Structure formats: structure tokens, C-alpha cells
Length: 231
Length: 244
Image 1 (tube, rainbow over the protein chains, first blue to last red):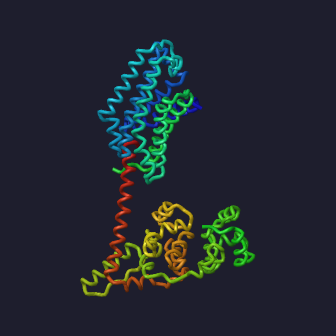
Image 2 (cartoon, rainbow over the protein chains, first blue to last red):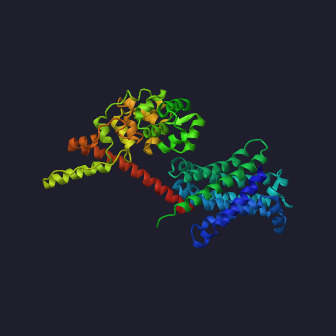
């Protein structure tokens, strides 16, 4: 299930990145291209067949996993501003882009780097599963999920409101997809608090979340192509 | 919304005799496949009954009354009240009448007669409900039909109302049972037994103050609708501008 979702997310995100190319050239919402490029990189690096060769190139000390975490942070930080503006939620924008949001981002990034340096992670291992017993690796994973959950939680209310009140069906569905995606995105951080082994479920939930948000964005583009903004 | 197909077949046999289904459909302007599908599903829509009935020059209200669900419809036909008639005058016609009267008063001439747009106008369902209803009409009608009040609201916003609901509303409001079907455009005013030109005659008799009060109500409702539409359009634009 997780593998299917991984491949589906990768293909979909790469397709979205390519889809944004013309807009990138024309200068329309360029940021979305970079967001999808970053997400594609993150998803690609979560798959052994891509992670192992890439990490080998980087010295085999799992630096690629750090790159994965940080590019995902960057992607959600960049896209959250757009989503908050699109659904007119100054609160969400403030919570993510404001001083407090930046502080959370910096703290989580610093946490990632610190715990990475504190861990003994020689030898490539996708998702650091071989080192899952080390306390510093557990904290590392916790930081990785914490920021995503924080940013996703900020975006659940505005997308939910848009899903409930929008006029165009397609825009409501896209908001609903994003809302569902962000809700799923909060889950890993909460699930890991439970004293259960949920490693299988966590993957499914995370990639399901990425896929849902990407589908939501793609639906916005479909509706945009049907109804271009009047100048 | 529908009648059982068994009863429909019986009715069709009694009114159309030996005519084939395809002949009936052709005359009524319904697709043969639509009728076949409705018969297979066991539920024939009342719109089909109305179309067949019109094609055979039978009174639609009488035809509907042969079905159990609508049996009191024919007996419940009453002429429209003044409020109902005025509710079926469109906003534009109402304003035009006021303008004509005002121009005539200024010039000391006879007011020109407005030729009214055909029923239903753009918000005919809402104006009809407002004209007939006690305040809790919508809630009671939704309960009687076993649907959620939001469901009814959605229909009214789209200027629709299922025949079943229209009849429930008329029954609760104590007006002619077929009158709501006129407001939804399901029946023509003639078919519901309204006098020809009843709206025009009433409009001419209505005093200025009543017309002005009515138009003020209509304008307020229109303003609210416009405000909502503009807010929705703005929300869509914002999504497209930021994420498109």
C-alpha cells in the first residue's frame, strides 16, 4: 500500500512540476513550480531505489535524509503562504510566516541538524530504519514530523471553510482534498505519541497526505484553466 | 417527484388506448429511452405524466390526480390570492410599472401598461413562498416531505422546488394546491386554473404604496443575493490568483 502510494505521489508530483513549467516561464505563481520540485525530490528520496544511489554519492552517511526533511520543510513553508492567501486566512499566514512560525521552522530545522550530528548513522538506510533504535534518531524523526504537523494544522481550518462554503463544485472539491491532505499530515506527529508500532501506517498516511494535497492543487489548475482570471 | 410505473401504465392505457410507447413519446416530446428507463426503474417522473397529458390535450392537474400521491390535487385547486399573483410579477416588471406610473404622474398622462414577462421569473419560487407562507412554512414543508431544511433552501436558491414540495407548501399555507406548481414553472398558469391576465389586472389595481413596499422587499432580497454572489466570485478569484 505504502509503495503504491509512494509511486503514485512521485509520478503525480513530477507531473505537476512539469505542468507548472509553462507558468514558470510566463512568471505566473512561480513558487508553485519550486514547491512541487521540492516535494518531488522529497518523495523520490523516500524510496530505496532512488535514496541508496543518491546517498552513496553524498558519502553514504544519510545526508540525503536530511535533504529530504529540509526540502519538505521548505516546500510546505513556501506553499502555506499561497494557500493561506488563497483561502483568505491571515491567521494561518501569520502562524506560519510570522515570527512564531519562523521560530518553529528554525527550531525544527536546527533540531534536525543537531540530532543528525549526534547520531551514528554511517551506512545508507532509507528512512533511517536501520538506526531506529537510537534515541537521537527517534528525536530526529520527531522534529521532522512536528513541523509538518504544525504547518498542516494551520491550513486545515481555512481549507475546511472553503470546502464547506465555496460556490464552484470543483473549487470545493479541491479545497476538500487539501483539507483531507493536511488533516492526514497532522496525524503522523500525533500517532507517534501512541505506544504502538505504526511504522507501516505512518508511511501510508504521509504519502496519502502528499497525494491528496497535490490532487487538490491540480484541481485548482483545472478550474483555473476553465475560468481564467479576468484582467 | 415520481409515480409508480404500474400505475402509470394503467393510466396510459386508459387515456392513450392502444397507442405504442414510441408514438406516445414522439407526441409528448420525450425520449423513448428516458421513458423506458423510468419504467424499468419502476418510477415515472411527474414531468413525463405532464408531458404525455399535454400531448393528449388532457388537463394536467386531472391527470396527476389519478395517481394516489396527488389524488387531492384537482379538488384542491383554488384561484390564486392577490399576494400570489403579485409574487409572480418579476422584479423588472414591478420596477417598470412603478417607473411608468411615476412618468405618467409627472407628465399628467395615462400610465403605459407593462406587458408582463411569462411565469416563472428568476426568483419566482422564493417570492411565492414569501407571499403564501407563515414564517415557519419552509421548516414545516421540509418536515412534511421528510427532507432536511437545507435541502429545501438549496432548491429555493436555485429557483427550483419539486412538485411534491410545492404541493406540501401550498397545503400548509392553505392556498390552491396547484399554485406552487405554477411558481416553479411545472404548470402554466392556465393549467392551474388562473384567470388569463389576472396578474396584469391586479397589478393595475394595486396602489402605489403597496407596489413600492413590495419592490423594496424585492430589492433588499436581490441585494443580499448579489452580495453573496460577489463574495463567492471574490473567493474563487482569490484561489485562482494564488494557486492557479
